[in-house]
Each structure stands twice: as structure tokens, then as C-alpha cells.
Amino acid sequence: MKQQNIRHLVSVPTDRVAQRIAVVGAGVAGLSCARELLLRGHEPVVFEASDRVGGRCSSRSTPVGRFDDAAQVVSGATRLASYAVQRPGELAAIHPWTVPATPAEDEPKGRDRDVDQDESDVTRTLKLMGAVGVPSMRALAEAVARPLDVRLDTPIRHAQRSGAGWLLHGAAGTIDEEFQALVLALPAPLALPLARESAGVAAALRAVRYRSRWVLLLGTDRAVGLPGYREFQGSPIERVAAMHSKPGRPNGTSQRWFIEADEKWSLQHEDDDAEGVADLLLDNFRAHARRSVNPNFLCAHQWRHAFVETTAPLSGYSNCLWDPAARLGVCGDSVVASQVDRVHRSGVALAAWMAEGLASGRQRNAVHQAGRAARSSFEAQAAYG
Image (cartoon, rainbow, N blue to C red):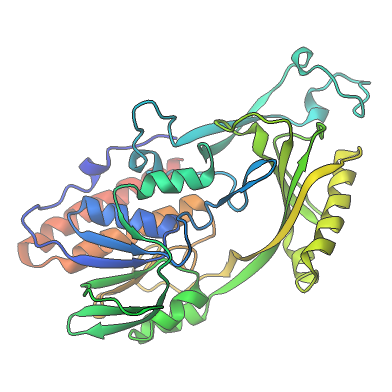
């Protein structure tokens, strides 16, 4: 993926007064918005209810190794590699991911697929899937968050206007800081209670609808015989991804598979228990692999707000919501498709609109020109990528 010089794209006046901006939500959209605001000379503070950053760039450790348990790959144009500056002696935080084509395309005819074989005698055609975080998707988010003031384990329960700014209330009471603007980078149901001060933003958020998914994490000691990434149609399983095929992952004795159920099946089994869902998805995975699969690790979980079905209606602002009178903005998959590159660009777009809206006089004209150039360049890059 081609990267551009961010500082050149967003060059803005340096004589303006920095604005303190609260960003609620430390997923990719919130972190991207905060990084862009920081580059423009503002002081973003990111509040995250959980004990980790990342949102859909989520990973978890298990006895058989680490799984990326939400987004599997970054597709399309992003600036994430530019944000995630590599430290000396450290692997780059984002790396291209290629996988072999399906075994049916590459394996010699007549080979017994139920017999493990020496992979060295098979010619592989590689397919570029996109890019992944190294050594995990969450590690990418952590690298993006490094220069930011991020407050973990800090859920925001209430937000209210105070003069020209905002006051926030957390689980322990009022946060004794005032912010000149507020960004909501949360799923719409979580953002709505914080957006009551803007009738327009609140109405837009009420229109958002999400789809949930069941996900199975599976470890096995024996090779499965599926490509590192594959999508299915007409099956309870929509896609599978092999953690052990991703770059920068430590080698282990177990293969690790991410298995995502499709929308219809997930809805039909919405109220089922995780153990029963795990058994059903395992049976279906075995059918696709066409061999026995004996797991040494099996865990199903329901991914709430997995994909947005109906996004918020936009009014005058590309890829985000922004109420300049209330100084309230929304970015992420409340307003765009639930993909890492899309929510990233949503955060970038909101930061550009905010930088223009928070400036004044001759500063606003300069910021407007810089922001318009940045948006146009990035949108062209995204269309190309």
C-alpha cells in the first residue's frame, strides 16, 4: 500500500491556540482522528472503557497462541503505517499478508488430501490479501496510540455542554477537565447517550442498525488443508483465516483458525449458548476441510456490532458527522462500512473538518485550504488503492 507524507498533506498554521478535544473510543477511527488532530497542533485525549485499545483491531492470547478475533486484514489506502513509527530493533507494526491459493488450484492431481505431505514439493501461487498488524492486529493499534494521551478503563457515562466546551462524567464522577470539542468514535448505540446535546447528531445515530456474528477460534495440532484465507457462500461459515499464515506470528505447534459464521446463520443462532455454537461450527469446518479436525482449543464468542447494516445519514460532511455549533463529531462505523480502512478514513475526515471548524479568521482560510487538499489527496489515494 502506498503511503504519503502526512505532515505535507495536513500542513496548517502553527500560531493558533491548541484546542483540547475529548475522543471517546480507542478503536481505529478514534485513534486515527486523534492522531490527525495531534498533527494539526491540537491536544486530543482518548477515553476507552476497556483495558486495551484497538476496537475491531482486536487480538487475544490463548494457551495455543494468539488470535486476531475480529478484523483480519487491512484493505485499501490508509495512513496507519505512517502513524505506527517503527522503533529501533522492532518489527514494522504493519506488513503485507500473502497466502497460497487454494489447494485445489495448486496441489498435484490425485494427491490424497487426507495424507499430510511435504509442502516443499508443491508450487504455490501467492495472493495478496492486504496488510496485517505485527505481531497482532492489536499491536498495530497500540503502535498508533503511542504518542497519544489514552485513558484506559475510563468509560464515559454522560457528556454535557459547558459554555463553549464539554464536561464529561465517568464511572467515578465528573472528570475535572474541560474540552473544547467532543468526538464519539463508538458504535451508535453507545454513542447515542452521549450525543443528546445535538438533536441532529442524535437523530442520525438512531437510524443506525448493526448485525452481530458468531466467531469460532480453533486450535489444532494437525494441518487442516485449507488456504490461509478463504470465503464461502451458501454455508454457515462465511470466511476462515489462518493465524499461523500471517507475517510476524511466532511459530507454534498448533494451527490457529479464525472461523466466522455468516449473517443469516448467526441470526438464527443468536440466542444459542457458546458451547453449542462451537460444536456446530466445528462440524461445518470439518466438512469444508474434508478431513477430521481434532481441536486442542475451541472457543466461540458472539461479536456484537460486528457490521453496520444501515449507517447514519450524512449531511454535508464526507465520511463523518460534525455539528459545528455543538462542537460534536462522530466517526467510525456509525457512518461508514465496518472495515478497518473505512473507519480509519472516517477518523481522518472528521479531524480535517474539526480543524477547519475550530479555527477562526485567517487561520480558518489556511486550514480550509490544507484540509481540502488533504481530503482530496486521500480520497484519490483510496480510490486508487
